Length: 528
Image (tube, rainbow, N blue to C red; front, side, top):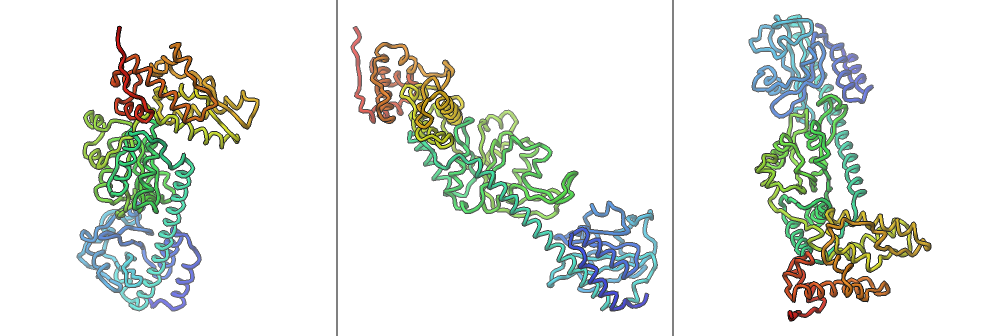
């Protein structure tokens, strides 16, 4: 073959600048190389650790793109990668050819042929190789080395540019997806303050402070509606990673066939429908917190993949050979008893122990009934702003009614009741700016979930005479109501505080603290 002219090399370089798309850039490179150096097959392969991944090829079967060539298994490729310049193999070389049986329209082993490889270096870094094969023996021997090195340099620059574009695109996609996730998380946020001064909530705050300061995995447990997400946000905001993202994953809503992609991401073409690369939630949460909500709903198959990521802090997107290291703090939440789920075979024991390094249980609303008044006030103010009122109040009788409901739906149910009651109260009120919620506006709560103390207040004649007026400030009226309820419960139980606590469905210690705050003295009645 005659020497390749300088004009041909210039045309090669100029031609490669006409397309910016990665796939088009690769194809244009191979087209131009084949026009410059006639051959039956040409392939561009990227080096990824100790293996080569085909990026583009011509003259070889399409399935070659799906192959991964380990250098230790393919001595020709290993020799090209170890070289600093072009490698031309002898036509009778005994080294096995990686493309045997892969040439289009040719079955079986390759006959005697010409084979050449170019290591593609950019800034002293080996990016990959370019291979050329011709069925005409010795056809590459007459091409001057400097010419082939020029082709290799142009190909290396093209590959480097394409890889940089891919990396920039991946980073852009990552940033875009991160903004989407953070925007969605911010949109769903219902406030950052944990409302409640009960003993149970004080203990919860202490647990949050302890866990937030340690870089450990936290498992937040509690019934539906208790505010587990709020606890997670507080954990993140008080942690050393608070400047990083907080990425939310609803494990119950993940399609089983897409769980791995959602968590770890995928590259373009990894599966049918993967038209572009996508960063997974782990990568989005890098240097931040990953919140795995409803972790108990995760299928067993996905649990094993999650466990590997937690153990190694490494992820591997679908279709990608290399692993990526991430720095992510995991906080999981569930309303299930995972220990029971482990016993029943529904949850992996090793994953359970990995997640529950520091378990936190969020108390139900019935365990902190004294916080109902505070929560009502909080939700009243939220509703006032949403509806656009100057003032939104609640009658004392209505507050008492809410204070002694069992709240199976917890704080979320209370929020919905207040929102619904506010709308009903505004609808029937003549003054649309100053609205008062009545018990009727609250609707009928399930009678079997209202405590006996509330029923006593509605049936006992003495209770009906209690001076609970709407003219009193909310806190004072609530204190008066609680004081009279406790006194009456003590009278019924003949001064037995434990029995009174059972009647009121509160914790004995909590009742004692409330009694002390309300200055209720010990009561002991004489029985006739």
